[in-house]
Amino acid sequence: MARITTITNQKGGVGKTTTAHALATGLGKFGKKVLVIDIDPQGNISYTMGADDQLPCTYHLLKGEISAAKAVQSTPQGDIIPGNLLLAGADMEFNQTGREFLLRDSMEGIEKQYDHIIIDTPPTIGILTINALTASTDVVIPMGADIYSLQGLSQLYATIGKVKKYCNRELFIAGLLMTRFNGRTILAQDLRENIEEKAAFIGSRLFRSYIREGVAVKEAQTQQTSIFDSAPKSNPAQDYLAFVREYLQMERK
Image 1 (cartoon, rainbow, N blue to C red):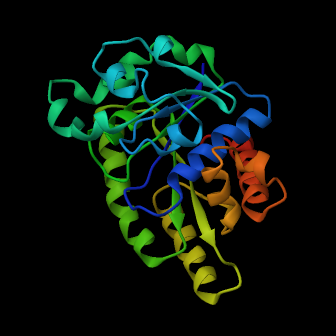
Image 2 (cartoon, rainbow, N blue to C red):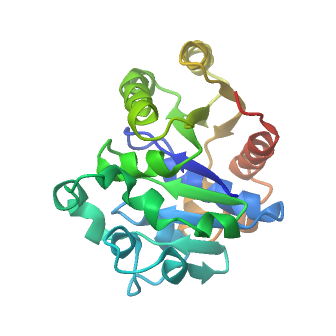
């Protein structure tokens, strides 16, 4: 049975999609069979992985128009069920009773075919993110090294708590991951300590690994490739590799 991990943060610009992509492709480097589900209308991870936007996507999956197995596209970077702008109206369109369970129900059976399923979410707390959390075993929260990321954590934690209470009692926060980190500044070090305290307060942890900034990330996205292939010796690639190892070694809290 797959471990299903949602990568989420309602704050934009924290490296959410970059982290989802690096985790998925990094797990592949460790020989894991991985499926990415893109539930973000922007479809950024779908673009980076080279998915065909003319084929059925997560929207059709949620509508019940196609099975998960038939929605999967195989790319050189791994398997993906892509997302696109059809998902933009989800909060208004998916208004039926039980709408929180659409993704989980549509995934029934496919989780047995993979070791890991990574879900990339939009930078909002709406029905798409709720669906991802309801379908998941755990959550990874990327956070920028800035005070606004820390402030937004309380709202996200409250949402996760409600999903755990009403939709998915087994859900847990695997950890918080600091991105775009500059360890040479006192501010970044202070924020790391604050985030570590906040993680402990919500019963989770701050990953020991942190992701340094580097142009290699944007270059890999432009080239539609994995950072591990395009710039394996870069700081972000080495940092994400350490994160993937930590993710694999961690025990459920």
